[in-house]
Image (cartoon, rainbow, N blue to C red; front, side, top):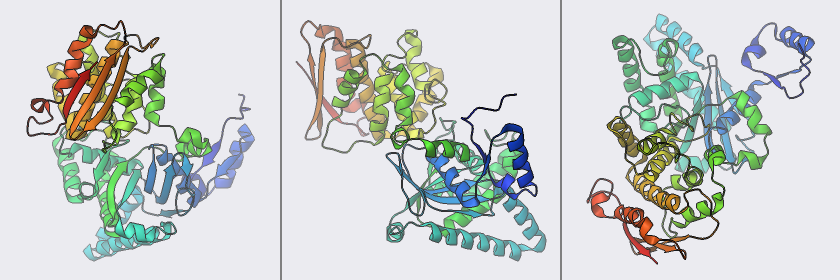
Length: 468
């Protein structure tokens, strides 16, 4: 067997580091393959693993925790515009604590054998060590900021992912519409309700043959250990704003760290949809951008999904008419974009809603419930804007059905006049405006109060479409 490939890097982590025959094991690999095994130090393993989590996010600034079986790594990470910031996190130190899911479960069982007082004592020990770790990780100059402002927590590792799936199963939107753990976000109060989550895990295990989706028997048995860690974490770090569940570890982190900053800065959603873009992408994207007025804040997710709407504006055109909206609806969760790494659930929901609207938003009764849950996840404001953008995309698709812009057939602009969104449409010479009257009227309708999200008393913006 030929092992001469030079594009292979072998990294060894905790299990190899702690093994009694670690040196002999690594030497045997080198003799057999010629590959030198890099033995990561405990602190370096935590840092590289945290960068693997950073590969799951377009931008990350906060505390990363990776929960393994034997230990938990904590690292403050800051990656913005592809740059890994030094100091206390993003390129700095990591703290490893012996509080992995399996290790905690053993300690809990040992403490319970001694008595209730021993378990209380152990919980306090976990809290104190987490608080000490937090104090040692804060970046220089960050202390004042974090005392006044909450920070975000990013979680990885099988034990935390199991906790995330349990939170999905108890979510107020039920059943939760996106089955992908990467990018799932909750507020600190939901994350920290250990009694509710643990009770749900226990009740589901006893009442159902199948249990909770993606929570194996082994993960279910570790719920008490994760609950103890979560409650200790909340007690030690009371400034948590939101919690995001991520995928990615040492493997992804080693690759991510070696990429140029320009590549790290690229948005995963935009990159993954580029292969489906039409020939004259920039012209189509410019039209979509022109549909968003300046001067007032818009939902942040719109800027994240806008390039992908342009990329996919014609992607479903070859499908039968009755399936286009339904396939677009499922594209980010079970379709062509389900496997994209580094996409938040809000981005998945927002893009799916906009693409569904682009094809008329007419779905069968089997998809109506799913559509409703995605809309609920997006929230009223984002839902309205995706309806509007999807309808604008429909107009662009009608004017340029092949995605080829040989001549300017449509000019589009948007501006605020008070609280009214004015949409200016100008059709080029020789362009039959009557052919597009139906979709122009459809754009106008989204601004009518009776069509607002939630009806006349709901959320929406008045629209004035002006055609010239």
